[in-house]
Image 1 (cartoon, rainbow, N blue to C red):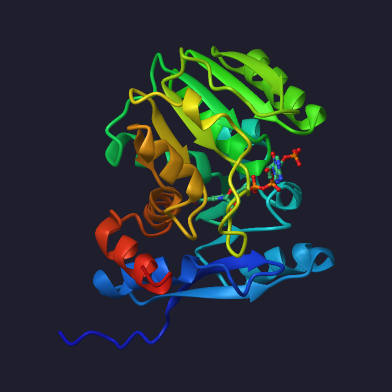
Image 2: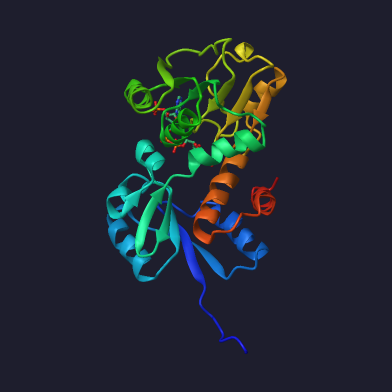
Length: 287
Ligand code: NDP
């Protein structure tokens, strides 16, 4: 029997402000094309005072889900029907999926980092001692997922003590890891007993491409895995210094691709074509 035509695309996207430079459309649209899915990813400017209306619009348009970026990742919590346990610990949602008529909040940033660590750097974080520079949104997501994945020690190094201690208290109270805070006043020396070092600050992000975190780079050892969350440009001065000391390095492009791949699976139920997404993003970044 001939099939009835279906001209309706399924809709997902991102709410943010400013949002024009958010690159997620590039990897999601590439994935939809590769799997021949009639889905569209919309990059939508939503001002802070309009978030509640935007979420109502998401429901009214029967959209399949949405990503949240600055400044909506925390504010969206009160507009959702349920929050995944890890997103609730992180205190922020970057992906909303639909379950029937319910909107469920998830956080794929830390999971994306973990998948990149496992698949690109071939490192299982269980039992590992990790130092994280930064205590903002990315650092919260990464440290919570590392703790849930069994990292034994987490050191949070941050300029503002309030953010740093709040994160460390959360990790110690709600997870089985042992976390401590180091105030970042002077050049930071990485302890010898470190397996993984992560830059989760915004230092080095385009257009400030020559900046690097203030650490003593000679304390990086060749047996460490050194990771950066900065996706653009991915080959940061921080990673170049680590490479020069023989460390294994992991750039922020993988984290960005995998957080999108996890979102793609939550929305479509299909495994994401990760290499297609990675190539599309690299091309968009002119790599
Ligand atoms: P936030 O603004 O929440 O946090 C920024 C962090 O960087 C804070 O810990 C801040 O310290 C620290 N910081 C900024 N400038 C300096 C400085 N000059 N010296 C010392 N510390 C500094 O940002 P996010 O956590 O949301 O984002 C951080 C980075 O992560 C961004 O570059 C973003 O692009 C990247 N990211 C990458 C993702 C990926 O998929 N690859 C996903 C999500 C984010 P303080 O608390 O003292 O202000």
